[in-house]
Every structure is written in C-alpha cells, then in structure tokens.
Length: 151
Image 1 (cartoon, one colour):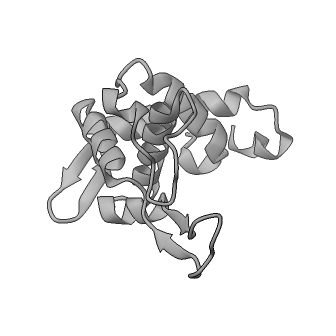
Image 2: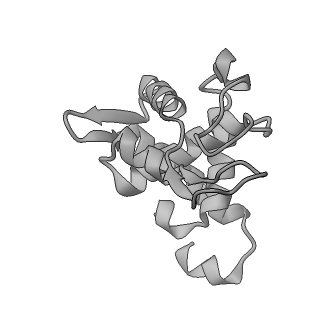
C-alpha cells in the first residue's frame, strides 16, 4: 500500500488540492487576506486555498497531533524592514492562523481531520484513506524509475 511518505510532496499536494476543490470552498475574505505577517500582498494563485488545505492535510498526517501555533510557525517566514531603510535584522514571523484554523475546520467538517483534546488536530481514518488513495494515484501517474520499488 502506498502512503504519504512514498510520493513526492509537490505532486501529492497538487492532486489532493484538485480533489479538495470539490469538497471545500474558499471563504470570501480570502481575496483580501495576507498569508502571513511577512507578506505584503494577498496570495496571487487562483487555487491558493485548496493548495494550502492540501498541504495542511499532509502536514497533519505526517506530524499529527499538531496545533495551530506550530503550523503557523511552519508557514511563517522572515520579516524584513522596509525596502528603503533596513534598520533592523530579519525576524521570524508566523503564517496566518486564521487561514490555518478555517482550513482545518473545513477539513474537520469533511471528516478528514479530528480534534485531539489538548493536543491539536490529527488525521482521521477517512482522511488517511483519502490521502493513501491520492498517493497511489499519484504514484501511478508519475514516470520516475526511482519510485518503481513502491508500486
């Protein structure tokens, strides 16, 4: 059986994002929200919401149970001063917790993620099956000889 660990992350996230586009919907406020403190503009990708939700689902499956604060730190970046004056050195900032929380709530409504009391979110059995099916489909589509041993 093929799992999340057996396929490249970018190919899996792309496939899962396509599958999630039918199951969840992007909030209206997402057109105006930044994806983190270190960003200056909202995301320019058309499918940003679905890609972020797929990435969150994969991270919860690999690292779960995991909390929103830890996920926000993983999606964070380096915040610099203005372009004109660089007075202070770079600082680490977190990603948008509202985006992460809302996406996880939508995934939880779909039954793919569950809440572990006091520990964060973890993957549900339905979510694990969803990811495993996506991983097996991705492995079949890939034409890479080094991945043949997993088939």
